[in-house]
Amino acid sequence: MGDFFGDLGRYLSSVHNREDLLGDLGQNVYLALVPLALGIVLAILLGWLGHHNRAARSVLLVASNLLYTIPSLALFVVIPGLIGSRILDSVNVIVALTIYSTALLVRPVLDALDAVPPHIVAAATAIGYRGPRRFLAVELPLSVPVLAAGVRVASVSNISLVSVGALIGTGGLGRLFTDGFQREYFPPIVIGIVLTMVLALVVDLLLVLLRNLLTPWERASRTTAGTEVAG
Figure 1 (tube, rainbow, N blue to C red):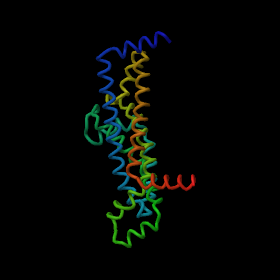
Figure 2 (spheres, rainbow, N blue to C red):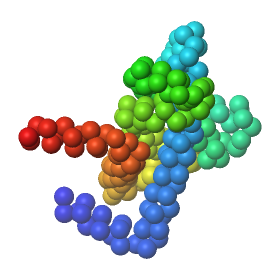
Figure 3 (spheres, rainbow, N blue to C red):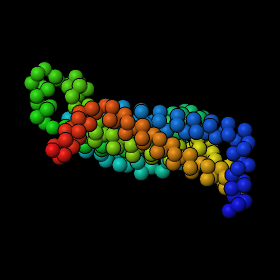
Figure 4 (cartoon, rainbow, N blue to C red):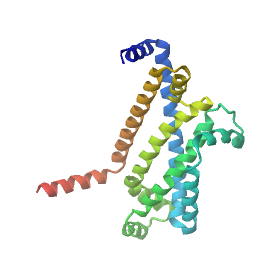
């Protein structure tokens, strides 16, 4: 145990290693969050379609389930042949994780839109809100509390899946795992695990904060409920 902590200290004392860690962390953030943002947009568009078309809803649910079962490494390898990119290009990871994020979020988007009270939608329609305007101004904001739960799951999934990209040369913190395994040297592996967990926790907390900022009525209702209970 003493040897391990000694090796860990020596690893972290190297300026070169610390610079590499920051670079890997930054790459992990980029490769995880860009596909998450793209996946949210695509899932919302597909969810809107599925919410208004029963046949499309069935197809989307089946397709999203099937897409998410594709092994990530296989998808990373196949994508260059589909889009014409280089095998070591980071765009392969971005495209793959965008597909996974979209597949993972389609059902939460549908559930979120289903959870919007029909009487509110009817009231919005009655005062002139129609189609895309009603969706953006009424349905989508009210679906945020349910949708946020799915986004939080997708963020953690992306942050962990980025590491698999290290096997094709683009994997953020995953480079620490491959480096440690190849050299049978544990400090980078442990550091990679810890940084991945910390990154997932920080992103999750930021998403909770964003959800609270986007849904002020939720805080107001909780405050009112707490006041009534106290009274």
